[in-house]
Each structure stands twice: as structure tokens, then as C-alpha cells.
Image 1 (cartoon, one colour):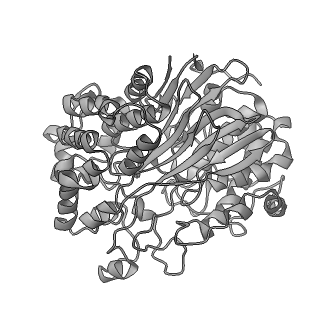
Image 2: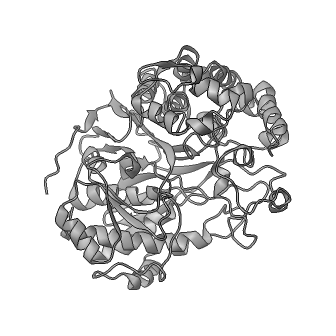
Length: 540
């Protein structure tokens, strides 16, 4: 079936960067043109996003990487998850009278240490070519001199203005004069520029030691938070092995626990016997099967996903073909799975950025970074200009749950990044935002590209559907679908027992995705950027 797209795929012969903001992608390309590596470009892009996309990312958040080495073909995982403070315990929260971790404020802001910067400096040390000062140059300039506010950023500031107005530092930064900045207005963050300069000058120590760390710790201490200077000093990023699965003729790499990457591989295994390529791309069968695969995989995920340094997560079993064959016995082609039979939890409301970068030597980076909720905790850490995340709200306070809060532990993460190979060679680098929607979006992208031959831009612009909840009080999952799906598809899905919510033709709540593909014959790079974001795929 022919798909009409709003944008053509971006084609380039030497290098490519794609992200949810055009200024950030441009910064990454500047670095590639200057002789930087894919890792350099990804850091530059991520750093600019921390300035111009502060509602979805920042230095106060976490990051996870997959890095493909062009020379060897190896794919490496880099864990930039922030660890819980030494005083962050179930007993400490019970003493404060808490039965769950709040979504906003000083508690989620300081239960864990920001991990993203440690991952930047670790990736740069291992795979960077240019000095860190050069890599961060664009981000420092944007923060110091200001950048134009997009309509999307203005809408998020307005959405969160009540929370942002509660803190003087956040209000001064995002609500100048007490008002939401208009689209096109210039916004600056000179404190963040100084923090970025400290990292440019001293690398890891510029953030986790010295003046910046002292201010982060002072803010946490005086506001009644958890992390201290000793927690900051103990934050490092760690290397590991990615998860690897196979769908038809494609080898797919995904980020392992504490991320939910295994759920993508499990869903693909569940669906492979149903030969999606022989079904209608926009028909009810494909949607119905994907929703059931999601429900089964998420049900498995909910009981086991945690930091593997603290809990055993049986990922090899979960991503095996034999396990999928057993679990697929639950799939019913005629009707929706009963909610009480295979319950799964989680929210589709999430705010994240994804960056893909490929350089001329075949090195590639798949990088996902986030604050979790819009503007994270909605707190700026004193005079650092850093918006602190609220990722620790994902911890469980159930003492028997593997994802329970413990000192030094990384909470489970919805963040996932992916890389794929065909015939042993790099084929795609992709990812998306959307909290618990991320595996579903990755699934839809891979199916569109592998089963139906769509290019990366066409796959990104496909009408999207997400099964889950947006915090609107739904008792169980609702199947949310963009309105470009055919009427007959929606009618058939409703007849099979799905609770349907039809969005407009395009909906930002469907998440935004970005990616790069490599043509196996010519080596030409194809870049895709989601029109649901402010992004751009830029190559040279």
C-alpha cells in the first residue's frame, strides 16, 4: 500500500544526525564536518537539546547509549542511569509518611543522582575525537546568548506553569516577567552555560566535583532532598553488552535492563509466526496482533524489570523464541485479551529525546536521554541552571518488588535505544520518546520497514497507535489511534473488544521517533525526523 508522506527521507553520503530539534541536529553536523566522530556529534546534539528542549531533557537526567564501531562491527551498551543516593531507602520515605514517591518536587529530584553527564564523558573518552570544549561549544553559546522559543516549547511551559511558578529559580528561567514566553521569543540560561563550560573544561569532574557539584549538593541539602556530594562523586557510567534478537532477516540490538528494551524483542518474537508482511499494513489484524503482543510482553516486564545489579532479570529467557512460542498461546486473532487475564501497567505520558548519529567511518550512536515527566521535577538546582529529573518516581516502595528503592540502585527505565544489522552490516539506528509507548513505537517502525519496505521517514510518519493510559483515569488500557487509520480498521478493532479512542490525524501524544538507515548497496544514509516534534534529519 502506498503511503503519502509529508517529508521526503533525508539522503546524504558521509554523515547524518537526527533529533527532535533542528538546532540540535545542526550542532551535531557541525561536529561531524569538523572531523568529529558519531559519539562527538551525539554529545553535541544532546547538549544543545538540554538547552533548547528543557521540557524533555537536560543535564539533570539520565541517558542510555548503543554505540556501533564501524571498524569492528561491535555494538556496545553504555549505562548512564543515575544511582539512588546513599540515604535513599524505604525506611527514609516511611519516616516522611510516604506510601509512594511523588511525581514532582524535591523528593524525586534528589533520590537519584543525574547520570547523563557521566555517560557523555565516558562515551567521549572512549570514542571521541575532538576536544570536549569544541563538542560543547554550540550548547554553551545557545545557553549563554539565548535561543528562539518554539511554539511547542511555549505550550509545554504554559502547560506546566503552575508547577514551574512554585520555585523562584524555575520561574525566573521559564516564566520571565511571570509570563509564558511567546513563540519566537529569546530564552537564555546563563547558569547552565557556566555549568556546561565547567564540563567542557574538566569533563566528568566539572559536574560531579568542584563548584557545580557543591551547588547541586547545597541545593539538595537545603531543600530537604537526598543526594550529597559523596553521591555525586560515586556516579559513573558503565559499559555492557546489548540485547540481541532477530526478526525475519534483521538482527536487532536493544538496551538491556534497567531499560525495557527486552520487551521489543519479545514482541517481535511473538509476532513473527503471524507473518505481518502478508497482512494489510493499515488493517485491523496487524494492529490487533501488535496490541496483544504488547499486553503479553508488558505483563512479563512488570514483574521482573529492575536494576540487574540488584535483581535477577531473566532476559535471555524472555527474548528466546521458545518462550515466545509458549506465551503466544494467549493470542486470540478474533478478540481482545481480557484485561484481568493478562494485565499490564504503566503510563504512556513521557517526555524524552532521542538522537541518532552516523559518521563517515560507519560509527553510529543510538542515544536516549530524558528527565521523565515534562520538566522533570520542575525544579532548577540552585545556580546551576540544571533542571532535575523525576525518574526516581519509577521506583517501587513495595519491599518485595525487584524494583524497590535501595541506595545505589538505578530505577527501571522506559528509555530504550536500538540499532539493527542486515547481513552483518549496520542497517538502522532508531529510537523514540513516549515512556511505556516506546516499545510499541519501535515495534511499529521495525514492522513498517522490515515487513513492508517503507523508508525511515515513511515509517515515522505512519499513522500511529498506542495501547495504554495517559493518566486520565482509565481503569484499563485504551487503544489510542491517530485518525489517519481507516474507519473500517477502527470499527473492526472495536468489534474485537478494544476500547477505542480516536485521535486527530496527527497527535503529539503518539510520541516522536527519529532514525537513520544505511543503504547496503551504496552506503547512502537515509534520515527520518518526526513531524510530531521540532526535529530535523540533517546530513552532509
